[in-house]
Length: 95
Image (cartoon, rainbow, N blue to C red; front, side, top):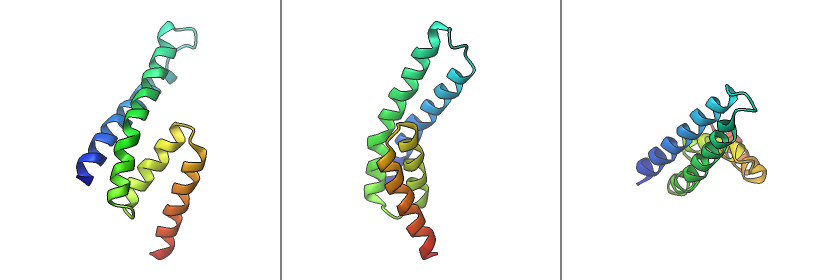
Protein backbone atom coordinates (compact mmCIF):
# COMPACT_ATOMS: atom_id res chain seq x y z
CA UNK A 1 0.00 0.00 0.00
CA UNK A 2 3.00 2.28 0.30
CA UNK A 3 3.16 2.91 -3.45
CA UNK A 4 -0.56 3.64 -3.64
CA UNK A 5 -0.41 6.08 -0.71
CA UNK A 6 2.65 7.79 -2.13
CA UNK A 7 1.11 7.95 -5.60
CA UNK A 8 -2.13 9.49 -4.40
CA UNK A 9 -0.28 11.91 -2.14
CA UNK A 10 1.94 12.86 -5.05
CA UNK A 11 -1.06 13.45 -7.27
CA UNK A 12 -2.61 15.87 -4.77
CA UNK A 13 0.77 17.50 -4.09
CA UNK A 14 1.46 18.07 -7.79
CA UNK A 15 -2.02 19.49 -8.30
CA UNK A 16 -1.44 21.87 -5.40
CA UNK A 17 1.92 22.91 -6.84
CA UNK A 18 0.38 23.53 -10.26
CA UNK A 19 -2.34 25.69 -8.72
CA UNK A 20 0.23 27.55 -6.63
CA UNK A 21 2.31 28.26 -9.75
CA UNK A 22 -0.80 29.41 -11.58
CA UNK A 23 -1.60 31.83 -8.76
CA UNK A 24 1.93 33.27 -8.99
CA UNK A 25 1.22 34.31 -12.58
CA UNK A 26 -1.97 36.15 -11.63
CA UNK A 27 -2.34 39.76 -10.69
CA UNK A 28 -3.13 40.13 -6.98
CA UNK A 29 -6.30 42.03 -7.88
CA UNK A 30 -7.58 39.13 -10.00
CA UNK A 31 -10.71 37.77 -8.30
CA UNK A 32 -9.51 34.23 -9.03
CA UNK A 33 -6.16 34.76 -7.31
CA UNK A 34 -7.36 33.92 -3.79
CA UNK A 35 -9.59 31.11 -5.07
CA UNK A 36 -6.60 29.54 -6.81
CA UNK A 37 -4.43 29.86 -3.69
CA UNK A 38 -7.19 28.33 -1.58
CA UNK A 39 -7.57 25.43 -4.03
CA UNK A 40 -3.81 24.91 -3.89
CA UNK A 41 -3.80 24.71 -0.11
CA UNK A 42 -6.80 22.38 -0.16
CA UNK A 43 -4.96 20.04 -2.51
CA UNK A 44 -1.84 20.15 -0.31
CA UNK A 45 -4.01 19.28 2.69
CA UNK A 46 -5.47 16.32 0.79
CA UNK A 47 -1.94 15.08 0.07
CA UNK A 48 -0.93 15.15 3.74
CA UNK A 49 -2.58 11.96 5.09
CA UNK A 50 -1.45 9.95 2.10
CA UNK A 51 2.18 11.01 2.31
CA UNK A 52 2.20 10.54 6.08
CA UNK A 53 0.77 7.03 5.59
CA UNK A 54 3.44 6.25 3.00
CA UNK A 55 6.09 7.47 5.45
CA UNK A 56 4.63 5.32 8.24
CA UNK A 57 4.81 2.30 5.93
CA UNK A 58 8.35 3.08 4.73
CA UNK A 59 10.04 5.30 7.35
CA UNK A 60 13.47 5.26 5.71
CA UNK A 61 12.37 5.95 2.13
CA UNK A 62 14.26 9.13 1.22
CA UNK A 63 11.95 10.07 -1.68
CA UNK A 64 8.90 9.93 0.57
CA UNK A 65 10.69 11.94 3.25
CA UNK A 66 11.72 14.66 0.79
CA UNK A 67 8.17 14.89 -0.57
CA UNK A 68 6.78 15.08 2.93
CA UNK A 69 9.29 17.76 3.89
CA UNK A 70 8.29 19.86 0.87
CA UNK A 71 4.63 19.43 1.77
CA UNK A 72 5.22 20.49 5.36
CA UNK A 73 6.98 23.57 4.00
CA UNK A 74 4.08 24.42 1.69
CA UNK A 75 1.63 24.06 4.59
CA UNK A 76 3.75 26.14 6.98
CA UNK A 77 4.20 23.21 9.37
CA UNK A 78 7.58 24.37 10.63
CA UNK A 79 8.16 21.81 13.38
CA UNK A 80 7.21 18.88 11.16
CA UNK A 81 9.45 20.35 8.42
CA UNK A 82 12.39 20.46 10.83
CA UNK A 83 11.73 16.93 12.10
CA UNK A 84 11.62 15.57 8.57
CA UNK A 85 14.75 17.49 7.61
CA UNK A 86 16.55 15.87 10.57
CA UNK A 87 15.38 12.42 9.46
CA UNK A 88 16.75 13.04 5.99
CA UNK A 89 20.06 14.26 7.43
CA UNK A 90 20.27 11.11 9.59
CA UNK A 91 19.73 8.93 6.52
CA UNK A 92 22.39 10.87 4.62
CA UNK A 93 24.82 10.40 7.50
CA UNK A 94 24.31 6.63 7.35
CA UNK A 95 25.30 6.48 3.69
